[in-house]
Amino acid sequence: MSRIVVKVGSNVLTRRDGMPDVTNMSALVDQIASLRESGHEVVLVSSGAVACGRGAVTPRKELDAVASRQLYSSVGQIRLINLYNQLFGAYGIVVGQVLTQKENFASRTSYLNQRACMLTMLDNGVIPIVNENDTASLTELMFTDNDELSGLIATMTDADTLIILSNVDGIFTGSPSDPDSHLIERVEPGRDVSEYVVAAKSGFGRGGMGTKCGIASKVAAEGVAVLIARGNRPGILVDLIEHPETVPHTLFEPSAAPLSNIKRWIAHSGSFAKGIVRVNARAADVLVSDRAVSLLPVGITAVEGEWEEGDIISIIGPDGRHIGIGRAAMASAEAQVSTGKRGQRPLVHYDYLYIE
Ligand code: GLU
Image (cartoon, rainbow, N blue to C red; front, side, top):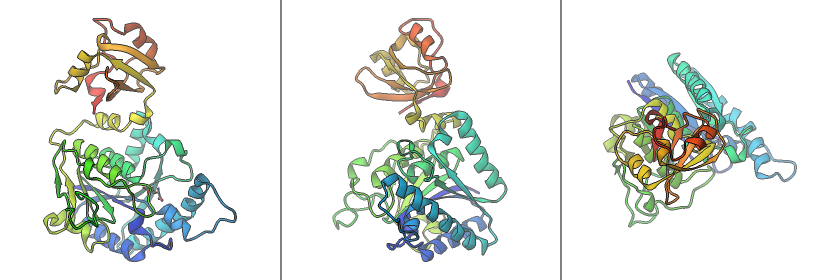
């Protein structure tokens, strides 16, 4: 049995006129039901609330971006979830709605709380259908898009596989419509394919291939296989799991040395950093080497910002390059006093350090 997180984009789930694409949705539900039948556990990360809301309500006066996102998502989300409930209900499958936001991943306590919720649902045979709570999220604190959210959910639930369904077959060496470009079938751990990604994003959703690529590499480095494929290709989900060689897709191979659970959380916490420590060249070299080392005050040249013990901090090298993220073992005031000194206890212990 394996655990699979399936992320479906707005373009797969909604039609141009803002109505749910019932044909695509029921095809996906049929396949998820069949995967469950074969013993797989599935978590669904579904976009489409805003796109669906557009077809359902016409604002009485012009709205700014935040108000329209709130209005459309409030209306669209229940349409989507109702439809999922009906479609899965026909198979006797119980679904539950998880509306979440970035703050729920910010502290270790809220992260573990969110994780426990997902695992309880799975343990009880309920399919979690996850989306960002677009009515409540503050613009500056939103997920880049649901690709980012699905990456967090995949690592948080210890999934084996993350499948990102979009409206293209995967990552191409150029524009997918250009006959000279071809599909990249495999991306080995550590290989950077970002140079191939066309900046433009398509249709309704917030994300594009650029974010998909970044998220896919990061999640694969954390030990989860990531597959990007076209969501409206008949039978795509089942084929990807059972006969992947028969369908076009891009696979980001999982790293053979996956991160511990706490490092996975830290890896995704960069945007919550409360402060910065700058380190000298020697410390930077040691940190980026393969050795399991902690960040010691002797290598620190500056402490910026104020934080408490347990907060997330960013580590920057002498050239200004971002080296990694860690959980501080002491508050900024104590770090300040120890800066540059030998024989001090580590500011970030190796177990709580994520080097990028
Ligand atoms: N949460 C948004 C929605 O349901 C989608 C965000 C995205 O496009 O990734 O409409």
